[in-house]
Length: 291
Image (cartoon, rainbow, N blue to C red; front, side):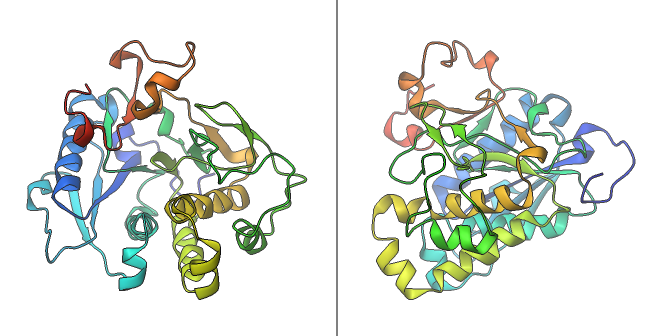
């Protein structure tokens, strides 16, 4: 049964909600496009409830995002945490989780820099799984090889969740196709809001960022700072969901437009019609003609 305790059989748009966030005008524009894409191309999920967390509601109230089926959620965060790269995601997700638990079976996360191009059925947990995720696109300097002991970056995360690398399942990164311990992309994915995954994500990330030594000495590279939120969420998923309740998410839902040219021939999309949702990151700013 679902952790949310919902036992009836509601319509798709009534059993799955979406959460994202906006902290400035660029993200407001992206989220406006995201919302429109959900309504236009989301199929039977097109009417889903959408929660938009505001990272700076005083300076960026994002009034253009208000509309039917959209709930604006102002966030309150410690200034130091708010300044940490992408830490806002854990706080936005945790606030939406409070609103969605007991009401929806699935809470789907979308980064601002994402867009929907087709029905979102792969994200629908249908009350049987704990999360739908795919591995990260690139190993970078963060991912751990299967069976390898956690380094100084991962060690407190593994200790927090009691993870043993000797028994953890292995996955394959999407773009460079390298084996990796549980390390999941968190730009498009979904969870059962009744489990408390997002609350745990916020709690552990906050604890690590409160550790001056870990924050300053261990997170000492750009990638280690940028992907800390993703590493922590991966630990939560590995411990609270596990392989038995993890619903695989294909590249069709969470297509990495930024790495399109690097994808193998069997993975590279030939048409937007082949996809359900994609991640465009900063392509709109760097290459306005990307589409």
